[in-house]
Length: 246
Image 1 (cartoon, rainbow, N blue to C red):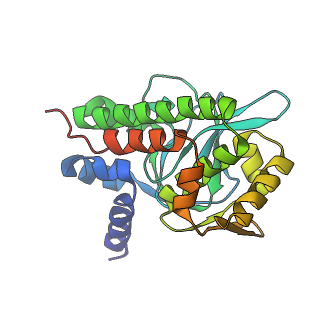
Image 2 (cartoon, rainbow, N blue to C red; image 1 turned 90 degrees about the horizontal axis):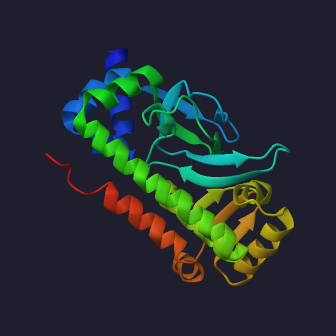
Image 3 (cartoon, one colour; image 1 turned 90 degrees about the vertical axis):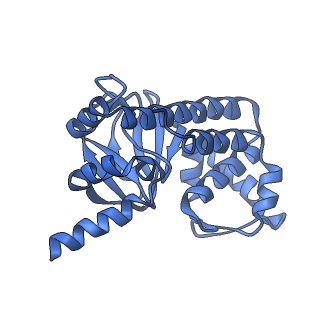
């Protein structure tokens, strides 16, 4: 009975990840015995740049930042992965190692699949290949748009984009992120984040207290954000909802 209960929990958790839920039922049933439930803590490093991940990780309630890190330790987020995707695309894209560091930005849960099993499933199933390649295309869109945003848009606009994308993944109106964490994510000074957050709070858009950000006016954030948020969201929604080719 405990084994059956554990399998049921994993099956229910798998439905919370949009990429796993996108897989055909026949594939999903084959994956279930191989998936492992995992508790992801804020700040936990899933893999470093230059390393080959041991597992592919499918967040369900957690958010993971993909960071590019300089020699002196400075870092900037190039993308984030939540319940729409998977951490570890290098496992099926042919690379021997990852080009970035993966760090848990928002604590929560996820499911993981061993690296060897992920490669085998990618090569075995045309449906799996389609879903994963479509997701990778959406991830590349996010990376490109993040680079544009960091170069051409204000900290105000970048923070709004960051908050909105996190809201989409968490499904609520509260985000647990310190100003220091946001600064590392955006690659800006902490003082700039504090000043911007105070402006958003004064405008009645958010409330910030001890690392907890409560969004009071999502529509206001969307109007204040640049076009990058809409481009990224549209990319994921379209690629993960289009019918699979026969």
